[in-house]
Image (cartoon, rainbow, N blue to C red; front, side):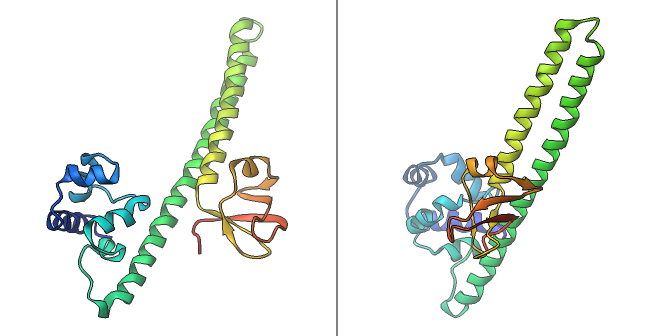
Length: 204
């Protein structure tokens, strides 16, 4: 998607609707700085407010994502192109989250093991320092595991092996589930059957 083109289109539509950046921002419950970033192509509107934004600007979501008014003859093709593009962007964002999880887990293991090992090595000379290092190492491990699980939970969906439905489970379900890698044994909220549900990056 061409963010600069979309930004210019938002600016034109806003002016056609007789709204200032501040007025549009107020109606959407955001800052005028956020609107300014859209119009300069530095960012895109969040998906949660796209429908409301389009309603205020009297355009469709497809027109917003295309950055121009769409002739009805081309509407279906452009809509499909926008869906494919959004699908790719979602997949890439979720891939980055899983990569961040892998990096965090590696960093946590190295840091915590280094602290615990250092604590053991200086144990006879500095008992208090050894206890502090081992405690910090253990704390880092727990925090790393928690944030790693949070990143995994937020990245994409899980697919039921039985009904093939894709869904986002609760954080508790992810934490408590037996697993190997990012595949976890959980109960499907759709068919109710338990199984090893694999991590997938997109809804479909």
